[in-house]
Image 1 (cartoon, rainbow, N blue to C red):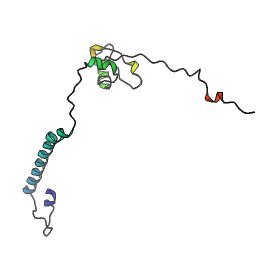
Image 2 (tube, rainbow, N blue to C red; image 1 turned 90 degrees about the vertical axis):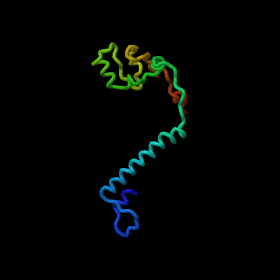
Image 3 (tube, helix red, strand yellow; image 1 turned 135 degrees about the vertical axis):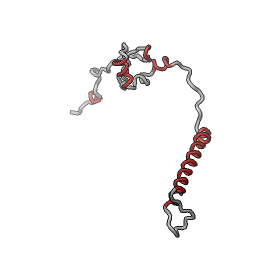
Image 4 (cartoon, rainbow, N blue to C red; image 1 turned 180 degrees about the vertical axis):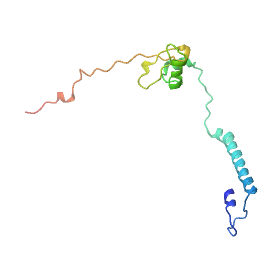
Length: 138
């Protein structure tokens, strides 16, 4: 509405025509009013309609990190490079790649707690074809 007041001509039917400093004051006032209303909605209305999560886990980070290979440390490539080349950790923080969790090395001193063994590959040599049991007619 403020911008309509700046672009009015005689006979448009708009009661207020703004120009110069009055237009600048109207735009500034509209912005401030918008910010006040926006802040009130965010601080008072949104908390009432969004579910609150008041329960926080008391499980230590080390226990959770032992179960999950992907953490902030192992999924951040810059952290992994810094661990290896700047801080020269032994072993350094390894970068997490999905499906390659067994390559992560444990180093509790730098927050890397996950460890796993490589899974055995499936053996397909002794599988029989479903067509092998079908008899052909002569």
